[in-house]
Length: 130
Image (tube, rainbow, N blue to C red; front, top):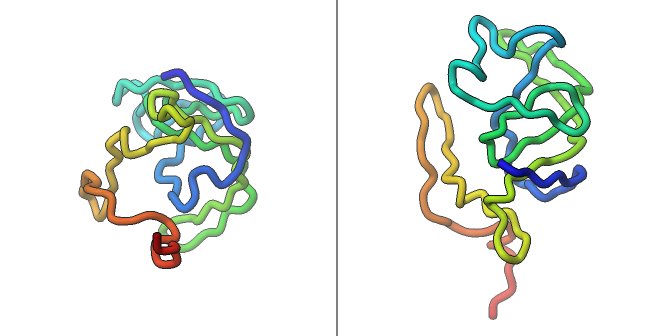
């Protein structure tokens, strides 16, 4: 779980952040249960914000909330990215972060799916022919 810290930038674009960990000072993380304890996750400190990061996560993004927009049943949270932590286990020999090595999953309507084969790359439609 050794992590590198990178300043905010576009290293993860166009990937979305898919998990948010937030906690009021002095409170346990989770509404009804301590999710770190129940899921056997390791809380680790970030460099900038005072919210625990998940040690087992291949990527942690430290953010500062700039706006909260109530949208009925949910709120949209807009935040400034302050820094990115990446697990060194997923860095290739050229120093490139290889998220695919972490075998990421996606969540859709109450179900989890594994991701499959590489289908293309960013800029595929405008890539110059060799």
